[in-house]
Length: 280
Image (cartoon, rainbow, N blue to C red; front, side):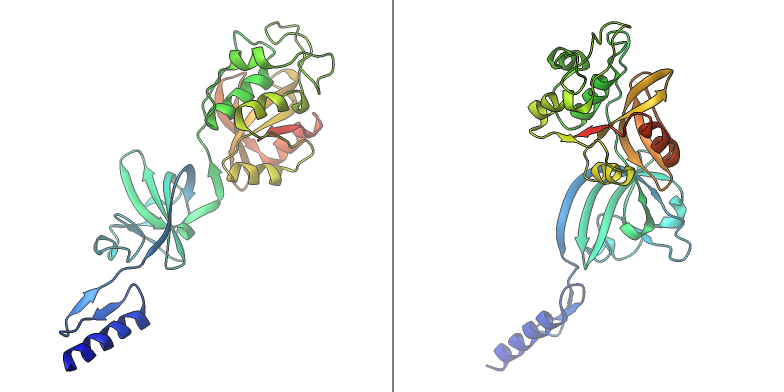
């Protein structure tokens, strides 16, 4: 009877102290319990490790701190990766903290507290598609192809160019032919149907602020933006793939390059083309 009472008392003690502490067993031995992972999410984005100057966050082997025996002692520290671009592939929540699984330089992997990163930086890796030579004036549909491919749609720039409606009104379809240098342009309204057909939804973000576009990207939805006086064109379209505190990252269908510009420069170019934008 006494043994049963001791066992019950030990169990109640374990419940009262919670996860991540030492629980006393019936025979007096101590057994470690670990922080419970309440959520694990597969992700894929890039960010930057912060300076880790005021607090040098630990890097753990297989999960957040105290989530297993392997994660009681750091194998490295955030300061060793300060300022480096890292690829985030998992997010997990444990003990009220968000932990990130990251890879650096394709061969170093670990888990670190989200607070160790620059949370103002968020970049997605989208397919890079050039509009030339097939679509010399088809920047908008090529930028849309990059957005839709990233979203999982099995499309190409030429398949979408065939689907894209033609009209004398750019809000309803492409004016002219994207296959010719004499082609003109199409606005977000003329592509809404194409986007919705492949993604189930379409979002005309014309007039939205740059902050709103960043939020859309943070939700893992790329955004096609219209810009004026760019790449030698009076109007052009780019696929926004990420941002930092001061810059916007994008894929350019004309140059077929992944690059960036400052927030203020992007704002100026967008203003020259009525702040048009398209997402889903």
